[in-house]
Length: 337
Image (cartoon, rainbow, N blue to C red; front, side, top):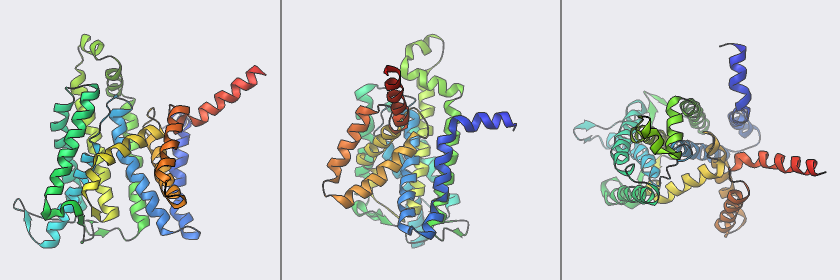
């Protein structure tokens, strides 16, 4: 890689690179003045960021407002938890032994999410607008109530993961180890999806959100491109679910609820839909604001809601557009003067 290519990669993306550098230093700060709780809070934010990055691939670039991404998140988390549950009990699932090895349960979770995304995507992508939103909501809630009905896996109480999840014997021995694992996985998918968005495939996805008829007229099938994008989106969100199971050591139907889907939409919009890494900013703001506001007032949800409305109204591009908007206002004042 030449110096010129490195410059072309770094200069336009310096804000996200700076954010990742600061996040990488967070455990060091925690050792000398913070707490383990801070790392756990940031881990939660990064996992939700990854889930929202997956959603944003079809929301921000494909114009698909999906309310079923909690189901992909839940499929990832529950697959890992269920396999660990059978490993703990020493019994089988469909004739196969359970496992706590993430090198087995992780790919299994992503594979199931891929199958689920293809099956549901083939159905919901034949609808548009409000019908698409309602279809995704209905499918999400079907899976939500299905998991509540499965009493052998905790029902509405959820499941505790008793055996430590590991990578062929390597266990996550600390909160920092889990944190860095999540951070690395997030950075990988942000980079991967950023490259994908800038490819011919990404151009078709963006074009499909603007004018499908024009694509069809030139011989491109928007449906097949959107189905692939929807499947990739679901798989990325499922990876976030796997990381959630690792960090929480517990899963529940709440992870499948439409409320979780709505949270992911809010995170994506709050951060900014125009960049792949926008949900990272949104997740950090979402989780930290939720924590600090709830510590200040019992009416924190009202305050938080008003804050989200203010961001959407004042900065339609999300938190990513705050600096650009301020610069534009200052330039306008200087020009008037």
